Image (cartoon, rainbow, N blue to C red; front, side, top):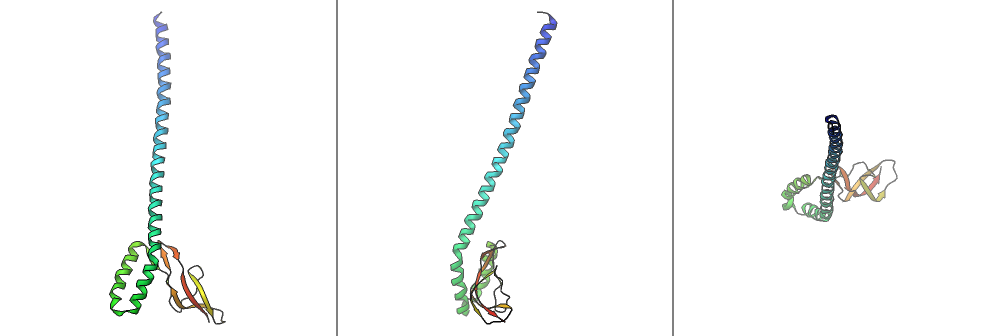
Length: 149
């Protein structure tokens, strides 16, 4: 075998190795990208599960909040508890929906269980059950009596 033939064989072998190296590098890059996408997907799933668990917990606390709120209204000595309750609700991302008497009725925020009067404008006459936002979205609409004025 001549020197030129050996060089051609070596060049062919080098090209084959270069091609194989390029294939393996591309496979490695795809694998890295797939793994990164998988990692992001798992993190997103974890975040979604945390949010769903937190939402379920907050939703289960609503009857307790209703009871504590009624107790605070009934017993003046419990008034200091209201600030602590409000602070805890804010930390949880839970905010009350405005439903005081005289507030304009909004069917997206309020459930009307009684309507009185025959005027053109609907306003809240009384709140029967407080409604709440959770992280900016309506968790539970306020149950109210509506008066048409």
